Image (cartoon, rainbow, N blue to C red; front, side, top):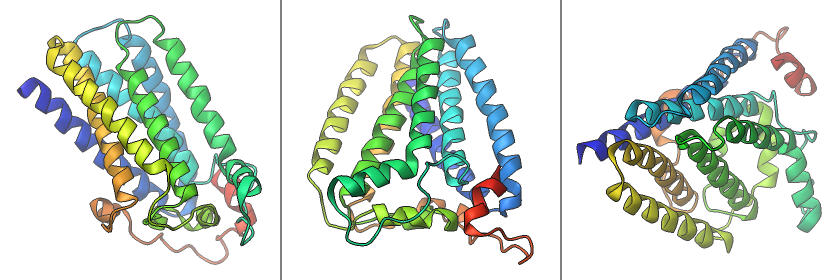
Length: 269
């Protein structure tokens, strides 16, 4: 039982801490964004090397390493998005009252470069670990991408809690693509399918050898946390309570150094 409990605790901690760290960095002055991106890029590059190194290893340590490396790569995407460095060609809000395909196409344009970057990185991870026995990193990245895409679609279609607090001032225009409603038809399908997959993975972990079980528990825990995040979209609970320590108000900048809205991304670069 300890073999299964430790990776679950590890996954929960690294999910909580890494999310808070990204939010904390995003609330620093914009003059720090460049250095945050540089440091994160170095970590992501090292993480890709780590995935390549552990792909052929089937030990418990290799499972932990591959899982952590996948999260470091994912963290790079989250940070580049929240700092405004890699979002999409559209950087203005959707007109009020816009519906249907025009609203959807504008929403896609607002995050297009970010999504293409995730797909490109996912393809690189698949190539690095192709036919290798250690697929923990690939599974982790796939779970993160699938569940984050599901969350974005649910926000677009409408949920109770939009979690606007997670958006920094320079990305507030993205709120125009969210919709507030009690429920949408995709939500029950999302959580039901994800829960069924998680249950199958738990069953597999209980029957697997120790090293394989560790990898399955790490990935399953991340999936369970993503399911929890989905439920927080519709339940009347504060979704930011866990990261209050990281969600302070952005540090004010001198007026002369503060960029205009149109210059934010150039400044971040």
